[in-house]
Length: 348
Image (cartoon, rainbow, N blue to C red; front, side, top):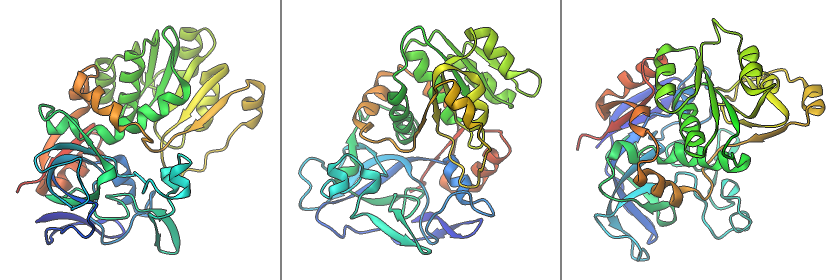
């Protein structure tokens, strides 16, 4: 089967790989129907890399598919079921999982180049940029088979955003600022709109993505190259937003000026190389609360229902659908800013 393999620093290679087999009785073989190219994949392929990954692993952690085969201990799924996959799920048995921290799962950590990492599917173990992938049964969630594969493949980034929004509990009538209108920024915008936010201001350099932000429910979309973001936010929100989302990576310091006194900040943008200077005095003076957010912890069941409902404009976010063999074309579209979310479809 054709697979996109992270071979070396900056190198993603299309290679013919053997179809995986079930190794444990609790495993499930998934036929991939759609897999997204994530910003994390771009970071992995940077030189130097802005996110770690295991060399030799098949990439692809945002995916959906159909159950092809189940192990003997799998009683709640059967071949033909349409499923979402949580690539970060823990074992469910260890001390950390039982405490509610699957990202710290003691059984699924692996040693990569001298550092311990969670064995995230598609980053530190083989993922879904191929035709078939084996996953543990606890990673699976059913979704209505009528949902198109390219929308079901948005489940993982949507779960991450749902987990983040739970931290700030946006209320009807509140105001929000979102820095960045990539897939994550657009998902935040869509969720805030669905939650009743009174005003959502999105800051984005790309006109292409600014248009998408308007279609996802943004009240005001600005180009920070031509407008003073801090002045616009102060004017539009009565001296600062209730919630500010950093969905880019290195812009945490700017969020401090955009949030109101006692405001809430979500830092979601993931860039291992970012080292922004932070005005700690402003955090103290304004009594700001800053939340880091990473994975979609315990959100996939609800995400399946959200996607099925059609309440979010997910078709706006999926800008391109390509066969797996054109993965490099998809990567280049994203690098040039000419795409939002690219979904790949295996060709078998």
